[in-house]
Image 1 (cartoon, rainbow, N blue to C red):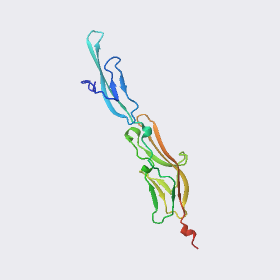
Image 2 (image 1 turned 45 degrees about the vertical axis):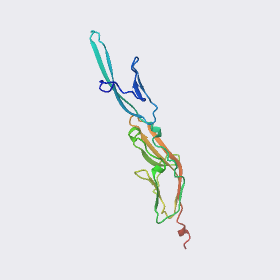
Image 3 (image 1 turned 90 degrees about the vertical axis):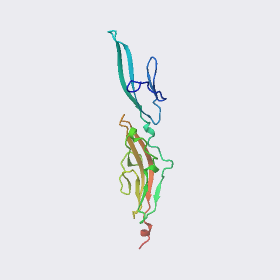
Image 4 (image 1 turned 180 degrees about the horizontal axis):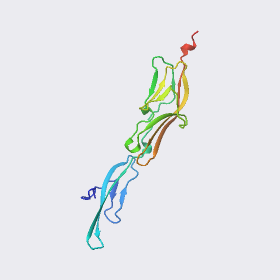
Length: 190
């Protein structure tokens, strides 16, 4: 029955209650994007030991969260090795996080995503002012370092924790090489 035990529950393909014994609840668990909360009750009518009719109402709520293992999909074309020439005028190059992971889907179910830079292998935190990740997780690479920088082999490590079951999902873009060549005009001066 519906959540107020006043009418029959609408049957759908994700969730339904048997209309005859053994009165089981069937709920699909393999819907990739999950399904919305279903509120329902069991209304049981029977005879009490005293011989009088007795009715019990039990209310339930159930839902399936999305498959969080797929909520940070890779972008169709990831950026690849970045080898940059020195530039005094274009001082940085920004790689949007959406060039690496196409989107962060359904953070309500899967948890808020956080992204950090790590060295290749995705274990140790990366720390170098020439390549940084910002609050929106876009990666900024300096292009105006006279002496040049890199080659850095890094990992973009994004994760989220599902508050409902404490499962952490991780997505990585590993072994990404970044380098900026030095300003060659200074090498040719007296």
